[in-house]
Image (cartoon, rainbow, N blue to C red):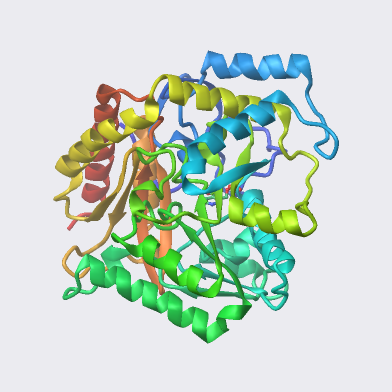
Length: 463
Ligand code: PLP
């Protein structure tokens, strides 16, 4: 009989582990292999990776073509320093990505090892853009509440994942950041407001914030195109980002879109901003799905506008990291891009995403504690509330998201748990972000297991 206890301890032997895990109280389950949507644990049990880790495994596990590409790169050369040298993997990866992004004005790529580093690099690049542009007084960033941009000092400074941020606030994080409301219709849109009116109100709030800060002092506005880890797939209201773009342009403020989680095809278009109308970010970050988990790699796509300003100034990006554009990471990501392209996985994600949505809504749409199901493609968030009518969340101590996470694991399904905090309100959610290779039958099985897990938790809580 599976038990869905809130904190579960993996049985990885009795020896005190030398590896410091995030929680000193819980030990993660050891995975011994992965294939397609499946992970196999040390005890032999099989788990469906319904969230691709953390929306990472975009083409599933154990892809031989990617493995071969990495081995080939290691056989050729494992490392070169980018100050003097480059590799065909890095150059071809940049070409593949900019081929997709050029229609949106993003013409150059820069590679690092994680989404957090990518965010830090965009922040530095944005600052350098204004510096080279002769606008030295610009020192501030505006971001959104409910955002997560990473764990490094810069990325955490523009984030609002409070549990991760509060211990370091004060001396450690940047204080030149202010926040506006997220585009979070479920909690933010008023009853008497249309989608267009809601979008216009959010854009006006951003304009007001720029005015409050002094628009000539603001370097950039930073936003996840679709809010991920702390908000669970919150898609913006129609017209929001087009409006944001206009307000940024009004003041010469750069627009940084963070697509570390929602990008790389997961939402049925390669870039999540594509359906948002005339948006064109100045800088865009990619991460997780870029290397699909086969190597730690993330990237920035840079607009010609930024490149032009740099070209007139120092002609170089002052930022440098030892492992930028690491050959093995680039080889892995290049192979992942080729699989995505050859198998037409992004377009298929769009179609199969509609199937997934239908299944999710029919399984959980009317469930007692399900407040909202939202997302697109293969990126779906389920927000849980104690009371659907008032949208009242569970008390944090209920740890609803952890209960669902554990219950799903016990049934052989991995989902991504989260608890966002919006304006002091706790929100429990799960993210389903399967590999884009998942078949309809596999998607159906994921939803079936998730529903079973949900039912178990509902029963556990009683009435
Ligand atoms: N940006 C977003 C939207 C993310 O979801 C994350 C990670 O969850 C990051 C940035 C940071 O990426 P990483 O964990 O690879 O540093």
